[in-house]
Length: 186
Length: 221
Length: 195
Image (cartoon, rainbow over all chains, first blue to last red; front, side, top):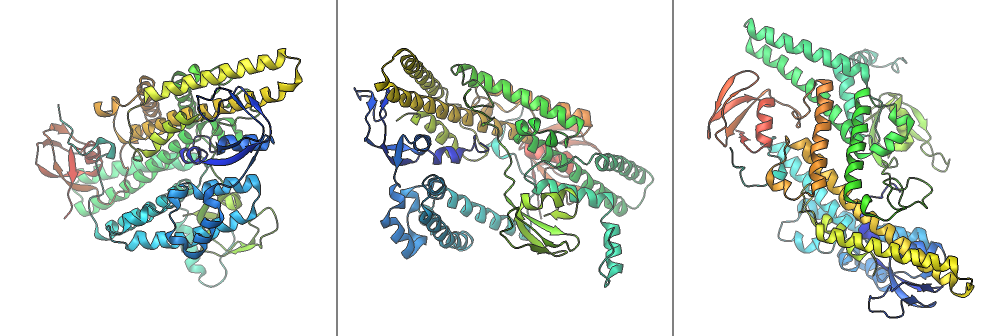
């Protein structure tokens, strides 16, 4: 797995996915620790983190459904005005999770949904990153997924770098880890 | 070498002359190394020549300063020297940092391992040992048996499923020195061949053009 | 839910600013290690139940229980390793930016193994540099002018630079060779002035 150490990949796989157990499993108290029976019955409906749902699905132990962020309502909202849907609130790893689910369940509509949403929102992210006054930006930022936030920051920092290059200025700086306070000498 | 396509061959000659100076070669290797996701072949003789060149330039600057040559001229020498030194240092730093990032992958892939210089191999070896020791102490020694490997998630894993690898299907910006004609980008013949014209920048998946990078027909930007 | 704490550990790393380190979370870290051992214990007992019992009725359910514990253990391990690995990456990048030893304020955020790792890593870089006879700590930014104008921020004293012996007193403004000034600037002892 080339992404074994990837922080975002790990966090994305923690997103919950609705699943139904097709088998029983002994010796596991998945739902909460106070569960006395310590057993999951066949037919139990649970929300499992993706990392577990995937492996169990591959072994036909659970069937999985799409999480809320891919339901009809979100799809309609995205179709209507993709740029202003609060995706972070629904799933900060919308695209990553979508891609993973797509390969797992083979729902082709997810692919088109992701692409359409990203295309519209990407444009908006770039425009906002280069033009928005600082006062407007924070509100817009709260709608973005993790990936989109990174794009926004990248676009903004390249804008800053461009301005700096045009205006000139100090090129050498203190190592950023050393913090702002001046290091006492001696 | 192929000759230019008729018109402006004087220009071509000049360009090809310029593009074969060591300074230009070093700049090209530095750019390629910077943009390529994987580690490229170490340019041994180029690095050796550049190192000698730097020594020579240092001597020239010192002599000129001592013998009272016009300070402007000296400062031009100095700037040239500075640029070469920067390129060399940066080239080596980029490589070492790539080695740090993909040490285990490079170590077990003979083709990649052979791209390193002797010193880099030693460096990689030490990096691997340093990190392994750190992993052992912090995590692995505390985990149950059968889960203690730093390469495999557990003994059940058939392959080394913990080793980070560079993503070769990432997009790079590249530019061909000469027209390369129609080029098949994908192994699957689904996509139409793309014609790579001289001097035009293209954004292409690295893995489709990496052989052109190896052979020096295309430069990464 | 299993492996929740492990993911918290990873999220904690993710929420710190890129390139910066938060203190090593020893407490949470050892809780996750404990969880690993818990899963292993459960796994073992289910496995031995499978081997002993001829009763094929529950065998399947035992098998899937064991599978879930195995998967949880592997997940926990991934989070622990990623936490250590990504912190190690930051530590390495520090090694490239500042001359060892690391300042106290960073040292105290490291675990004991991380401190040792940082030391070993700087030694590894050092040994490569001396073998190549090349200083890699300078020239981090492409050069423009051989000399730059700097203001000294601390009383550094009289120092032999590559081309002169200079008295680096606080507030002094002078022209220095770029490569000489670079180290001082990255340590926060000088700042570059531009017109």
